[in-house]
Image (cartoon, rainbow, N blue to C red; front, side, top):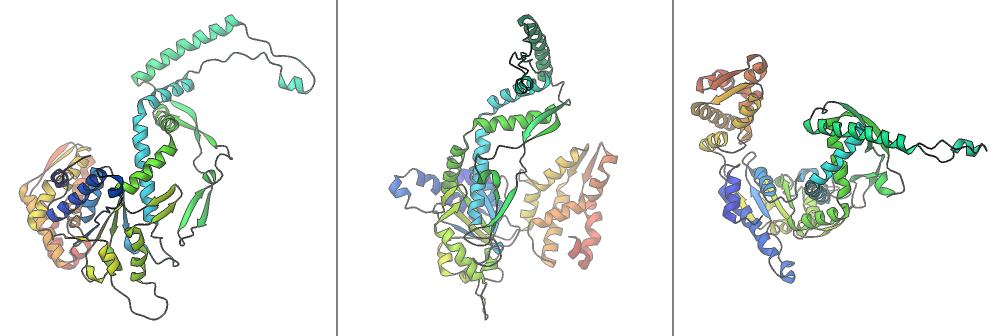
Length: 465
Protein backbone atom coordinates (compact mmCIF):
# COMPACT_ATOMS: atom_id res chain seq x y z
CA UNK A 1 0.00 0.00 0.00
CA UNK A 2 1.48 3.31 -1.12
CA UNK A 3 -0.05 5.55 1.55
CA UNK A 4 0.99 9.16 2.13
CA UNK A 5 1.83 10.26 5.71
CA UNK A 6 -1.50 12.12 5.92
CA UNK A 7 -3.41 9.01 4.83
CA UNK A 8 -1.54 6.89 7.41
CA UNK A 9 -2.44 9.35 10.19
CA UNK A 10 -6.07 9.41 9.00
CA UNK A 11 -6.20 5.59 9.18
CA UNK A 12 -4.69 5.59 12.68
CA UNK A 13 -7.22 8.25 13.76
CA UNK A 14 -9.99 5.71 13.13
CA UNK A 15 -8.77 3.64 16.08
CA UNK A 16 -6.56 5.85 18.28
CA UNK A 17 -7.57 9.11 19.92
CA UNK A 18 -5.03 11.96 20.13
CA UNK A 19 -1.23 11.42 20.16
CA UNK A 20 -0.73 13.39 16.95
CA UNK A 21 3.06 13.66 17.39
CA UNK A 22 3.50 9.89 17.68
CA UNK A 23 1.24 9.26 14.68
CA UNK A 24 3.19 11.74 12.55
CA UNK A 25 6.52 10.15 13.54
CA UNK A 26 5.44 6.60 12.61
CA UNK A 27 3.77 7.84 9.40
CA UNK A 28 7.02 9.50 8.27
CA UNK A 29 9.04 6.38 9.18
CA UNK A 30 6.66 4.23 7.13
CA UNK A 31 6.70 6.58 4.14
CA UNK A 32 10.52 6.61 4.19
CA UNK A 33 10.42 2.84 3.69
CA UNK A 34 8.38 3.30 0.52
CA UNK A 35 10.78 6.02 -0.66
CA UNK A 36 13.80 3.77 0.01
CA UNK A 37 12.43 0.96 -2.17
CA UNK A 38 12.27 3.37 -5.14
CA UNK A 39 16.01 4.14 -4.97
CA UNK A 40 18.80 2.37 -6.90
CA UNK A 41 20.09 -0.77 -5.07
CA UNK A 42 23.45 0.74 -4.06
CA UNK A 43 21.76 3.74 -2.38
CA UNK A 44 18.88 1.63 -1.01
CA UNK A 45 21.23 -0.59 1.01
CA UNK A 46 22.86 2.42 2.65
CA UNK A 47 19.64 3.87 4.07
CA UNK A 48 18.61 2.32 7.37
CA UNK A 49 15.28 2.97 9.13
CA UNK A 50 15.11 5.72 11.75
CA UNK A 51 13.97 3.80 14.82
CA UNK A 52 11.47 5.42 17.15
CA UNK A 53 11.41 5.68 20.95
CA UNK A 54 7.94 6.39 22.38
CA UNK A 55 7.93 7.89 25.87
CA UNK A 56 4.70 7.96 27.83
CA UNK A 57 2.72 6.32 30.64
CA UNK A 58 0.87 3.04 30.24
CA UNK A 59 -2.50 3.01 28.52
CA UNK A 60 -2.03 6.04 26.23
CA UNK A 61 -1.78 4.12 22.94
CA UNK A 62 1.90 3.26 22.37
CA UNK A 63 1.38 -0.43 21.56
CA UNK A 64 -1.86 0.22 19.67
CA UNK A 65 -0.15 2.72 17.35
CA UNK A 66 2.58 0.20 16.44
CA UNK A 67 0.12 -2.70 16.04
CA UNK A 68 -2.33 -0.73 13.87
CA UNK A 69 0.55 0.59 11.78
CA UNK A 70 1.75 -2.94 10.98
CA UNK A 71 -1.79 -4.12 10.22
CA UNK A 72 -2.32 -1.13 7.95
CA UNK A 73 0.60 -2.01 5.64
CA UNK A 74 0.35 -5.81 6.12
CA UNK A 75 3.84 -5.91 7.61
CA UNK A 76 5.09 -8.71 9.89
CA UNK A 77 4.85 -7.43 13.46
CA UNK A 78 5.93 -8.79 16.84
CA UNK A 79 5.79 -7.27 20.29
CA UNK A 80 8.37 -8.22 22.90
CA UNK A 81 9.02 -7.10 26.47
CA UNK A 82 12.60 -6.04 27.14
CA UNK A 83 12.35 -7.48 30.66
CA UNK A 84 12.03 -11.05 29.29
CA UNK A 85 15.58 -10.97 28.00
CA UNK A 86 18.77 -11.50 29.97
CA UNK A 87 22.42 -11.48 29.15
CA UNK A 88 23.67 -14.42 27.11
CA UNK A 89 24.77 -17.17 29.45
CA UNK A 90 22.09 -16.58 32.08
CA UNK A 91 18.58 -18.00 32.33
CA UNK A 92 16.17 -16.03 30.16
CA UNK A 93 15.19 -15.50 26.57
CA UNK A 94 17.81 -15.03 23.91
CA UNK A 95 17.41 -11.60 22.26
CA UNK A 96 17.62 -13.20 18.80
CA UNK A 97 14.27 -14.84 19.62
CA UNK A 98 12.50 -11.61 18.58
CA UNK A 99 13.85 -11.99 15.04
CA UNK A 100 12.85 -15.67 14.92
CA UNK A 101 9.35 -14.70 16.06
CA UNK A 102 9.21 -12.07 13.31
CA UNK A 103 10.17 -14.63 10.64
CA UNK A 104 7.55 -17.08 11.97
CA UNK A 105 4.91 -14.33 11.77
CA UNK A 106 6.01 -13.41 8.23
CA UNK A 107 5.73 -17.06 7.13
CA UNK A 108 2.24 -17.29 8.64
CA UNK A 109 1.18 -14.11 6.79
CA UNK A 110 2.63 -15.11 3.40
CA UNK A 111 1.25 -18.66 3.66
CA UNK A 112 -2.23 -17.29 4.45
CA UNK A 113 -2.05 -14.97 1.41
CA UNK A 114 -0.90 -17.76 -0.93
CA UNK A 115 -3.60 -20.11 0.37
CA UNK A 116 -6.22 -17.42 -0.17
CA UNK A 117 -5.05 -17.07 -3.79
CA UNK A 118 -5.65 -20.79 -4.47
CA UNK A 119 -8.79 -21.01 -2.36
CA UNK A 120 -11.21 -21.57 -5.26
CA UNK A 121 -9.16 -24.37 -6.79
CA UNK A 122 -8.60 -25.95 -3.35
CA UNK A 123 -12.35 -25.74 -2.61
CA UNK A 124 -13.16 -27.66 -5.80
CA UNK A 125 -10.60 -30.36 -4.94
CA UNK A 126 -11.90 -30.57 -1.36
CA UNK A 127 -15.46 -30.99 -2.66
CA UNK A 128 -14.31 -33.87 -4.89
CA UNK A 129 -12.66 -35.57 -1.93
CA UNK A 130 -15.84 -35.13 0.10
CA UNK A 131 -17.83 -36.79 -2.68
CA UNK A 132 -15.33 -39.67 -2.70
CA UNK A 133 -16.07 -40.17 0.99
CA UNK A 134 -19.86 -39.87 0.74
CA UNK A 135 -20.43 -41.59 -2.62
CA UNK A 136 -17.30 -43.44 -3.78
CA UNK A 137 -17.12 -44.87 -7.28
CA UNK A 138 -16.67 -48.68 -7.44
CA UNK A 139 -13.41 -50.32 -8.44
CA UNK A 140 -13.19 -53.14 -10.98
CA UNK A 141 -12.63 -56.56 -9.37
CA UNK A 142 -9.05 -57.70 -9.97
CA UNK A 143 -8.25 -60.72 -12.18
CA UNK A 144 -4.69 -61.07 -10.84
CA UNK A 145 -3.58 -64.23 -9.01
CA UNK A 146 -4.69 -64.49 -5.41
CA UNK A 147 -1.53 -63.58 -3.41
CA UNK A 148 -2.24 -66.21 -0.72
CA UNK A 149 -2.73 -68.97 -3.28
CA UNK A 150 0.40 -67.91 -5.15
CA UNK A 151 2.36 -67.99 -1.88
CA UNK A 152 1.28 -71.51 -0.99
CA UNK A 153 1.46 -72.82 -4.52
CA UNK A 154 -2.25 -72.88 -5.27
CA UNK A 155 -1.77 -70.88 -8.46
CA UNK A 156 -5.49 -69.94 -8.65
CA UNK A 157 -6.81 -66.58 -9.86
CA UNK A 158 -9.67 -64.41 -8.68
CA UNK A 159 -12.56 -64.38 -11.15
CA UNK A 160 -12.54 -61.29 -13.43
CA UNK A 161 -15.62 -59.08 -13.30
CA UNK A 162 -17.80 -58.96 -16.35
CA UNK A 163 -17.70 -55.58 -18.18
CA UNK A 164 -21.47 -55.25 -18.21
CA UNK A 165 -21.69 -55.82 -14.44
CA UNK A 166 -18.93 -53.30 -13.79
CA UNK A 167 -20.49 -50.64 -16.03
CA UNK A 168 -23.87 -51.15 -14.35
CA UNK A 169 -22.29 -50.63 -10.92
CA UNK A 170 -20.50 -47.49 -12.13
CA UNK A 171 -23.69 -46.03 -13.62
CA UNK A 172 -25.60 -46.68 -10.38
CA UNK A 173 -22.80 -45.15 -8.27
CA UNK A 174 -22.59 -42.14 -10.61
CA UNK A 175 -26.33 -41.45 -10.20
CA UNK A 176 -25.92 -41.61 -6.42
CA UNK A 177 -22.86 -39.35 -6.68
CA UNK A 178 -24.73 -36.73 -8.75
CA UNK A 179 -27.63 -36.80 -6.27
CA UNK A 180 -25.19 -36.43 -3.33
CA UNK A 181 -23.41 -33.56 -5.08
CA UNK A 182 -26.68 -31.64 -5.42
CA UNK A 183 -27.48 -32.24 -1.75
CA UNK A 184 -23.99 -31.02 -0.80
CA UNK A 185 -24.47 -27.85 -2.86
CA UNK A 186 -27.80 -27.22 -1.13
CA UNK A 187 -26.13 -27.65 2.28
CA UNK A 188 -28.32 -30.60 3.30
CA UNK A 189 -25.45 -32.82 4.47
CA UNK A 190 -23.53 -30.36 6.66
CA UNK A 191 -24.23 -32.26 9.90
CA UNK A 192 -23.67 -35.77 8.48
CA UNK A 193 -20.70 -37.63 9.99
CA UNK A 194 -17.82 -38.82 7.78
CA UNK A 195 -14.53 -40.52 8.55
CA UNK A 196 -11.48 -38.83 7.07
CA UNK A 197 -7.77 -39.52 7.16
CA UNK A 198 -5.66 -36.57 8.34
CA UNK A 199 -1.99 -36.04 9.03
CA UNK A 200 -1.01 -36.62 12.65
CA UNK A 201 0.52 -33.32 13.72
CA UNK A 202 1.48 -34.55 17.19
CA UNK A 203 4.99 -35.44 16.07
CA UNK A 204 7.54 -36.17 18.80
CA UNK A 205 9.56 -33.09 19.76
CA UNK A 206 13.18 -32.94 20.81
CA UNK A 207 14.40 -30.09 23.00
CA UNK A 208 17.84 -28.73 22.24
CA UNK A 209 19.88 -25.83 23.54
CA UNK A 210 20.74 -23.19 20.96
CA UNK A 211 24.35 -22.16 20.44
CA UNK A 212 23.65 -18.51 21.24
CA UNK A 213 22.30 -18.97 24.74
CA UNK A 214 20.00 -21.21 26.67
CA UNK A 215 16.83 -20.60 24.72
CA UNK A 216 14.99 -23.88 24.27
CA UNK A 217 13.93 -24.64 20.73
CA UNK A 218 11.50 -27.40 19.81
CA UNK A 219 12.79 -29.49 16.92
CA UNK A 220 10.22 -31.54 15.09
CA UNK A 221 11.63 -35.02 14.36
CA UNK A 222 9.84 -34.96 10.97
CA UNK A 223 11.73 -31.74 10.06
CA UNK A 224 14.99 -33.12 11.42
CA UNK A 225 14.93 -36.30 9.32
CA UNK A 226 13.36 -34.68 6.26
CA UNK A 227 11.46 -37.17 4.10
CA UNK A 228 13.00 -40.27 5.67
CA UNK A 229 10.04 -40.79 7.98
CA UNK A 230 6.67 -41.40 6.31
CA UNK A 231 3.95 -38.95 7.33
CA UNK A 232 1.83 -40.40 10.08
CA UNK A 233 -1.91 -40.52 9.45
CA UNK A 234 -4.87 -40.91 11.75
CA UNK A 235 -8.58 -41.34 11.16
CA UNK A 236 -11.13 -38.89 12.55
CA UNK A 237 -14.92 -38.83 12.58
CA UNK A 238 -16.14 -35.31 11.87
CA UNK A 239 -19.15 -33.57 10.36
CA UNK A 240 -19.19 -32.72 6.65
CA UNK A 241 -18.86 -29.04 7.62
CA UNK A 242 -15.64 -29.70 9.57
CA UNK A 243 -14.33 -32.16 6.97
CA UNK A 244 -14.68 -29.54 4.23
CA UNK A 245 -12.50 -27.08 6.18
CA UNK A 246 -9.85 -29.73 6.97
CA UNK A 247 -9.71 -30.91 3.37
CA UNK A 248 -9.67 -27.32 2.09
CA UNK A 249 -6.59 -26.59 4.23
CA UNK A 250 -4.87 -29.79 3.06
CA UNK A 251 -5.57 -29.13 -0.63
CA UNK A 252 -4.51 -25.47 -0.40
CA UNK A 253 -1.25 -26.52 1.31
CA UNK A 254 -0.52 -28.95 -1.54
CA UNK A 255 -1.03 -26.19 -4.14
CA UNK A 256 1.50 -23.75 -2.65
CA UNK A 257 5.28 -23.96 -2.76
CA UNK A 258 6.55 -23.71 0.83
CA UNK A 259 10.12 -22.92 -0.32
CA UNK A 260 8.79 -19.89 -2.20
CA UNK A 261 6.67 -18.92 0.84
CA UNK A 262 9.72 -19.08 3.15
CA UNK A 263 11.88 -17.09 0.73
CA UNK A 264 9.25 -14.36 0.35
CA UNK A 265 8.59 -14.30 4.11
CA UNK A 266 12.28 -13.77 4.94
CA UNK A 267 12.45 -10.92 2.42
CA UNK A 268 9.30 -9.35 3.89
CA UNK A 269 10.61 -9.70 7.44
CA UNK A 270 13.93 -8.09 6.45
CA UNK A 271 12.47 -5.24 4.38
CA UNK A 272 9.11 -4.52 6.04
CA UNK A 273 9.22 -6.13 9.49
CA UNK A 274 8.36 -4.11 12.62
CA UNK A 275 9.57 -5.13 16.08
CA UNK A 276 7.99 -3.35 19.04
CA UNK A 277 10.17 -3.49 22.18
CA UNK A 278 8.06 -2.57 25.20
CA UNK A 279 9.21 -1.72 28.74
CA UNK A 280 12.59 -0.45 27.54
CA UNK A 281 12.73 1.81 30.60
CA UNK A 282 12.88 -1.28 32.86
CA UNK A 283 16.34 -2.15 31.53
CA UNK A 284 17.62 1.46 31.56
CA UNK A 285 20.19 2.51 34.17
CA UNK A 286 23.27 0.86 35.58
CA UNK A 287 23.25 -1.40 38.58
CA UNK A 288 26.03 -1.10 41.13
CA UNK A 289 27.20 -4.12 43.05
CA UNK A 290 29.87 -6.75 43.47
CA UNK A 291 29.98 -10.13 41.84
CA UNK A 292 28.64 -11.28 38.48
CA UNK A 293 26.53 -8.49 37.06
CA UNK A 294 23.42 -9.90 35.37
CA UNK A 295 22.64 -6.30 34.65
CA UNK A 296 20.14 -4.29 32.76
CA UNK A 297 23.08 -2.78 30.93
CA UNK A 298 24.07 -6.28 29.82
CA UNK A 299 20.63 -6.78 28.27
CA UNK A 300 20.98 -3.46 26.45
CA UNK A 301 24.33 -4.59 25.03
CA UNK A 302 22.73 -7.82 23.79
CA UNK A 303 19.85 -5.96 22.14
CA UNK A 304 22.24 -3.44 20.52
CA UNK A 305 23.60 -5.63 17.66
CA UNK A 306 20.05 -6.69 16.67
CA UNK A 307 18.91 -3.05 16.45
CA UNK A 308 22.21 -1.96 14.89
CA UNK A 309 21.98 -4.53 12.12
CA UNK A 310 23.23 -8.09 12.24
CA UNK A 311 22.56 -11.51 10.73
CA UNK A 312 20.48 -13.92 12.81
CA UNK A 313 20.40 -17.66 12.13
CA UNK A 314 16.89 -19.13 12.11
CA UNK A 315 15.73 -22.61 11.10
CA UNK A 316 14.40 -21.03 7.90
CA UNK A 317 17.69 -19.37 6.95
CA UNK A 318 19.84 -16.31 7.66
CA UNK A 319 17.93 -13.09 8.40
CA UNK A 320 19.47 -9.61 8.27
CA UNK A 321 18.08 -7.05 10.71
CA UNK A 322 19.55 -3.94 9.02
CA UNK A 323 16.23 -2.71 7.59
CA UNK A 324 13.78 -3.90 10.26
CA UNK A 325 11.99 -0.97 11.90
CA UNK A 326 12.32 -1.02 15.69
CA UNK A 327 9.82 0.91 17.80
CA UNK A 328 10.69 0.99 21.50
CA UNK A 329 8.44 2.25 24.27
CA UNK A 330 8.58 2.91 27.96
CA UNK A 331 7.01 5.05 30.67
CA UNK A 332 10.41 6.34 31.88
CA UNK A 333 8.92 7.42 35.23
CA UNK A 334 11.99 6.49 37.28
CA UNK A 335 14.72 6.30 34.64
CA UNK A 336 15.29 8.59 31.66
CA UNK A 337 16.15 7.81 28.04
CA UNK A 338 19.62 9.22 28.79
CA UNK A 339 20.12 6.32 31.25
CA UNK A 340 20.30 3.92 28.31
CA UNK A 341 23.81 3.13 27.05
CA UNK A 342 24.89 5.78 24.49
CA UNK A 343 25.14 3.23 21.64
CA UNK A 344 21.51 2.16 22.13
CA UNK A 345 20.33 5.76 22.48
CA UNK A 346 21.93 6.49 19.12
CA UNK A 347 19.93 3.70 17.50
CA UNK A 348 16.61 5.37 18.43
CA UNK A 349 17.10 8.85 16.95
CA UNK A 350 13.39 9.76 16.83
CA UNK A 351 11.97 10.53 20.28
CA UNK A 352 8.24 11.03 20.69
CA UNK A 353 6.56 11.95 23.95
CA UNK A 354 2.96 10.78 24.28
CA UNK A 355 0.55 12.94 26.24
CA UNK A 356 -1.45 11.94 29.29
CA UNK A 357 -5.11 11.39 28.42
CA UNK A 358 -7.55 14.12 29.42
CA UNK A 359 -11.25 13.89 30.30
CA UNK A 360 -12.15 14.87 26.71
CA UNK A 361 -9.85 12.14 25.39
CA UNK A 362 -11.62 9.54 27.55
CA UNK A 363 -15.04 10.65 26.23
CA UNK A 364 -13.77 10.45 22.63
CA UNK A 365 -12.24 7.00 23.29
CA UNK A 366 -15.67 5.79 24.47
CA UNK A 367 -17.49 7.24 21.44
CA UNK A 368 -15.36 7.67 18.32
CA UNK A 369 -12.98 4.80 17.42
CA UNK A 370 -14.30 2.01 15.19
CA UNK A 371 -13.34 -0.46 17.91
CA UNK A 372 -14.65 1.70 20.78
CA UNK A 373 -15.29 -0.30 23.94
CA UNK A 374 -18.95 0.82 24.04
CA UNK A 375 -19.49 -0.57 20.51
CA UNK A 376 -17.85 -3.85 21.52
CA UNK A 377 -20.18 -4.35 24.50
CA UNK A 378 -23.24 -3.32 22.47
CA UNK A 379 -22.36 -5.96 19.84
CA UNK A 380 -21.75 -8.64 22.50
CA UNK A 381 -25.07 -8.05 24.27
CA UNK A 382 -26.99 -7.79 21.00
CA UNK A 383 -26.17 -11.48 20.42
CA UNK A 384 -28.43 -12.15 23.43
CA UNK A 385 -31.18 -9.88 22.10
CA UNK A 386 -30.35 -6.96 24.44
CA UNK A 387 -29.96 -3.52 22.84
CA UNK A 388 -27.86 -1.20 25.01
CA UNK A 389 -27.74 2.57 24.47
CA UNK A 390 -25.32 4.91 26.26
CA UNK A 391 -26.32 8.54 26.81
CA UNK A 392 -23.68 11.28 26.49
CA UNK A 393 -24.07 12.00 30.22
CA UNK A 394 -23.26 8.37 31.05
CA UNK A 395 -20.06 8.50 28.96
CA UNK A 396 -19.06 11.77 30.64
CA UNK A 397 -19.64 10.24 34.07
CA UNK A 398 -17.51 7.19 33.22
CA UNK A 399 -14.75 9.47 31.93
CA UNK A 400 -14.86 11.51 35.17
CA UNK A 401 -14.64 8.35 37.27
CA UNK A 402 -11.72 7.04 35.18
CA UNK A 403 -9.81 10.29 35.68
CA UNK A 404 -10.58 10.30 39.42
CA UNK A 405 -9.49 6.68 39.99
CA UNK A 406 -6.34 7.15 37.88
CA UNK A 407 -5.40 10.15 40.03
CA UNK A 408 -6.09 8.39 43.34
CA UNK A 409 -4.43 5.06 42.48
CA UNK A 410 -2.09 4.07 39.66
CA UNK A 411 -2.51 5.88 36.34
CA UNK A 412 -3.15 3.11 33.82
CA UNK A 413 -4.60 5.41 31.17
CA UNK A 414 -7.42 4.22 28.92
CA UNK A 415 -7.21 0.67 30.33
CA UNK A 416 -9.14 2.00 33.32
CA UNK A 417 -12.19 2.33 31.07
CA UNK A 418 -12.29 -1.45 30.62
CA UNK A 419 -12.58 -2.08 34.37
CA UNK A 420 -15.21 0.65 34.74
CA UNK A 421 -17.27 -0.57 31.76
CA UNK A 422 -17.12 -4.15 33.02
CA UNK A 423 -18.41 -3.05 36.43
CA UNK A 424 -21.19 -0.88 34.95
CA UNK A 425 -22.47 -3.70 32.71
CA UNK A 426 -21.84 -6.58 35.12
CA UNK A 427 -25.50 -6.93 36.15
CA UNK A 428 -26.80 -6.70 32.57
CA UNK A 429 -24.21 -9.20 31.28
CA UNK A 430 -25.15 -11.66 34.04
CA UNK A 431 -28.91 -11.41 33.54
CA UNK A 432 -28.93 -10.93 29.73
CA UNK A 433 -30.19 -14.43 28.78
CA UNK A 434 -33.21 -14.08 31.09
CA UNK A 435 -33.96 -10.42 30.20
CA UNK A 436 -33.79 -10.87 26.43
CA UNK A 437 -35.16 -9.49 24.23
CA UNK A 438 -35.11 -5.93 25.51
CA UNK A 439 -33.66 -2.44 25.38
CA UNK A 440 -31.63 -0.78 28.13
CA UNK A 441 -30.61 2.86 28.41
CA UNK A 442 -27.41 3.52 30.38
CA UNK A 443 -27.60 7.07 31.75
CA UNK A 444 -25.67 9.06 34.37
CA UNK A 445 -27.84 7.80 37.24
CA UNK A 446 -27.32 4.18 36.19
CA UNK A 447 -23.53 4.65 36.20
CA UNK A 448 -23.61 6.36 39.61
CA UNK A 449 -25.80 3.62 41.08
CA UNK A 450 -23.31 0.95 40.05
CA UNK A 451 -20.08 2.81 40.73
CA UNK A 452 -20.89 5.54 43.25
CA UNK A 453 -20.20 3.55 46.44
CA UNK A 454 -17.02 1.98 45.06
CA UNK A 455 -15.56 5.34 44.03
CA UNK A 456 -16.38 6.92 47.41
CA UNK A 457 -14.65 4.10 49.31
CA UNK A 458 -11.04 4.74 48.33
CA UNK A 459 -9.68 1.41 49.60
CA UNK A 460 -12.44 -0.44 47.75
CA UNK A 461 -11.76 1.38 44.48
CA UNK A 462 -8.10 0.38 44.71
CA UNK A 463 -9.09 -3.29 44.51
CA UNK A 464 -12.13 -3.17 42.24
CA UNK A 465 -11.38 -0.38 39.74
